[in-house]
Each structure stands twice: as structure tokens, then as C-alpha cells.
Image (cartoon, rainbow, N blue to C red; front, side):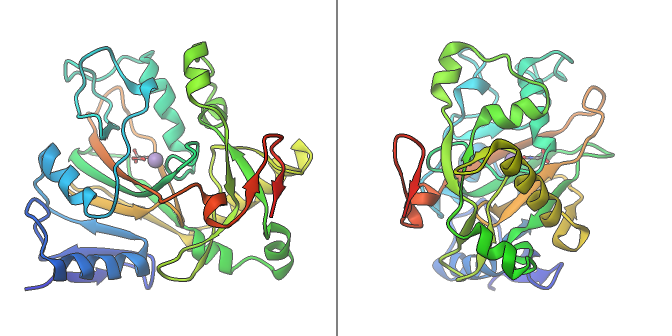
Length: 304
Ligand code: OGA
Ligand code: MN
């Protein structure tokens, strides 16, 4: 039996059944998943029972895996392997993190609209988030379809965005939640990187907005004007008609295309409820400017 794809929306979000992701996938199932993924951009696989190795093996079908950022390392111990980001609210002793826990404070930026790792030179391509323990109330994850949002822009705005590049940084999104307590070493390790503001997704040929709360300035634009443009685009893209809210069930694996979606975690009482969700992330093939044939010189000027 091959996989069952059950659309939740016409072309953005689907559930996938009749598949056990803990097993090695046969090529027909893998292609069916890929085909659905390039259409929908977000897939949910309910009732999956995965250990870390199985989670990573599934992710590795789609490309090379990211490793955890140094800012999230807690000494020599860790709840998850290097290739699995621990998005839980639990500490190394499996207890709920203290209110002033540094990782907790940094992770509050996940409540802002973003797409993963655009602050890395080579950003994320696909995120696979697995729900081990779910908060009983709150803590949904919302997704915005940046292809549909692009399609709905005016022709004037599409022309204005053509060829524009923005600077993304980890610092920019943390600044938005009031976190700036980085060591000099951390600062050096997380330099700003350029990313295009509109990208074309090779597998579907669709164009997509590419912005996130990681954006600092827009190249070639006064700071105020760039900030205003980014705020306007995020507000546009996150209107209700482009957004789907996922209410987690334990053992859901949710997989999304970081190149053409934004997401955010809705608030929950993280000092009361345990929420253990963990992410494997596939890297994109190159920086988005490089993929678009745009070179950025050392003065941060885009030259096509
Ligand atoms: C992520 C993320 C949001 C959430 O896993 O990349 O942003 O719902 N998660 O916790
Ligand atoms: Mn994220």
C-alpha cells in the first residue's frame, strides 16, 4: 500500500497516512511524499513512533542535516544529538526550564513569524518537527503560505521586490524579543548574511516571498524604509487566508518547506505545561542569493 495524502487545504497543508517513518522508506513512498510536499509545503504525519536515529534517518532522505547552534549547547550534556534541535521547555534533568533560563529567553523568538535558519549563510530547506509531549492548551504552530502571499501582491510590489536582498541575523530576531546578551564569541559566530526577498522554488516553479523576523536591513534602502517594507510584507503574508494553524497531537511529525513558508509557535504556559518537540533540519543547497545568481560584495552591495 502506498501513502495516503489527505489535503487539509487545497494546496498548502496535508496529512499523510499509511506510512511508518521509523522504517526505511521504499522509493515509491519517498517519491509520493516528495510529490505531495512540493505541492503542499506542509505535511503532517500523525502517530509516528520515532527514536532520534529514526527521526534523523527520515530527514536524511531529503539532504544534508544541520547541526545545533552553539548558543543552544549546555556544557557537555544534551537532551538530543547534535543534529536534533531541542525545542522543548525541558532542562537537562527533564524538568521544566526556569523562567530566567537563557535558552528559554532566546527561544521566545520562535513565537515571532520566521522561517528557519535564514540567519545562516546556507539556510534551512526543510524542517521536520516531532511532537513527543504536547501542551494540553496553547502551543499550536501556525504556518503561512509565502507562495500564495507572493501571488496576491500587487504588480507594483512585485516589481519593487524584484532583485532585493535583505540582511538576516540571529541577533535581529532576538532583539525583537528583548534578548541581546551575547558573548563576543557568539557574536562572531553569528554574522549577518544576505538572502533574497523573493525566491523561486525549483520543484514547483512557484515564486515565494522570503522574509522573516530575522531580517535586519534591506540592502540599498534607508533603515526606516526597509523596516517598513519588511513589516508590511510580514503583515500581508500572515493574513488569515494564508495561514493554517496546527493543533498538535502527540507523535505528529510535521514537515515544512522553509523556502516558501513562515511559521511561529503560539504561546502556552511554559512554566506549567511540558512541551517536548524536537527538530531535524535539512540544509538548502546554497545561499539564496547564490541560487538566484546575485553576488554580494564585501561592502554589502548587491550586483546582479
Ligand atoms: C521550530 C519552531 C515553533 C513551535 O521548530 O523551528 O519555530 O511551535 N517551532 O515551537
Ligand atoms: Mn522555527
